Image (cartoon, rainbow, N blue to C red):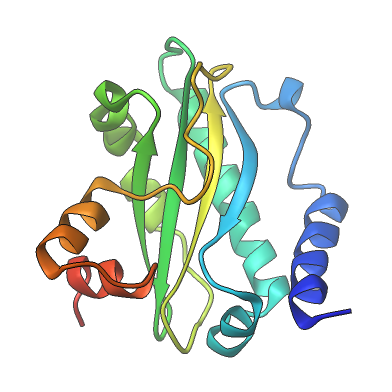
Length: 176
């Protein structure tokens, strides 16, 4: 078994085993539909965080997003992605990508600050992942398949002539 399969398998097993991920009926305001890792497994392992620390952080993000949206005035369903960047030693930033771009400001104002207030796990290099989600039942179309790319990342890559995800855009929009 490759190290990538072991790492992804550990995350999947941890998520399946945790009690912090209740069924959709228990959290109708927010539901994670998939997780996207921006780095290959070897880079994930080298840069961190360890799988168990990442699982705990994912649980905390999900719990906070569920709470924030459950306390907000229910809206028409929406789908999007929480793109989370991590950088040493233990810093985080959240970007929000919405299937319906007209809803982005609403979700940024609701979710960005509470999610960024969560203590992230320690890493030794840049790392990023996305939590694709449905809010209040979701919407069609969902976020496009593949890697959700925040508008800020796209703009930075246009100005710099491109680069590899997630390092190039994160360095541009989140300098040391």
